[in-house]
Length: 289
Ligand code: C2E
Ligand code: MG
Ligand code: MG
Ligand code: MG
Image 1 (tube, rainbow, N blue to C red):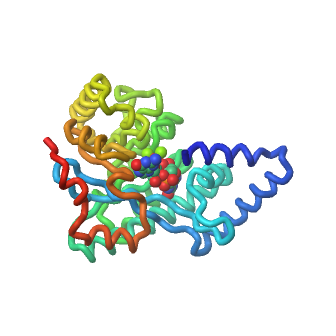
Image 2 (cartoon, protein in one colour):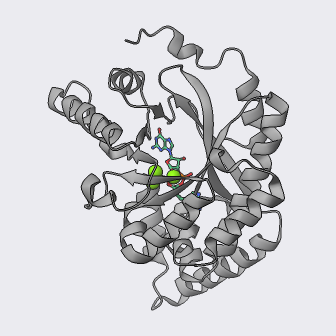
């Protein structure tokens, strides 16, 4: 749904359309302004460990609170930011904010939390990325093993040699690497073995097919086992129903995130959520085995 809307807006911005081109330019100018101002905000979506049903971390998701347009979804401005070479400074801002917020959160709650941050393909092309990540870790005092960087399959395979090299440098910093939206590309597990990876995030479309389809269930189960044999942990994305959550619990899938567990939320709401004793009380009524 969000993706579809993003595509429509994007099509609306064709260069040959005069008005659209102007709109696009306006958006680009305000994107530059946003970077220097207070319009960007990081939302956090909790991630749950399926064995303990506790929140062990969250994904940082960028939000743009545009003064006239309201909240512009990432699918509408990330492609533009990539095209206009604004994604690296924006990505750097998100990383810093996510590390700062999570350090703060860990102090408040007195327990470790992992945070995952999305990186675009463009950022992976930037050889200065490992140094930039290290600088953020130093500046914020964030523990490297608790930081996870998410990259899509297509970003990784764009330039395999370079990606593999940069990933090794990032791994040397002690951070974790996750493949985002896994199952939407074509490369597959065997292919991805050449990269030093830690986590596979199963795409929502991949997770959702299941329910009552025994073969899909067996498939996911076998897939998780294979990932484990390759020393990768598996996170299911886009869990929208209790059925899906139950199904995942009966596989060896490690973690889950999705609207059924919690939606992405501002930092203040996340603090409340993590402090709430009724956390995941919905799931308490379900039996897992
Ligand atoms: P993603 O990294 O795959 O993030 C998951 C997206 O799925 C998020 O959309 C999240 O809100 C949404 N989602 C989570 N649970 C559910 C669910 O149960 N059902 C459904 N239908 N959706 C769910 P969001 O926040 O709109 O972000 C969209 C994409 O934009 C992200 O996909 C990511 O590719 C990109 N993005 C977001 N923040 C950043 C960022 O800081 N940097 C970069 N480079 N990309 C970002
Ligand atoms: Mg992601
Ligand atoms: Mg994803
Ligand atoms: Mg996605």
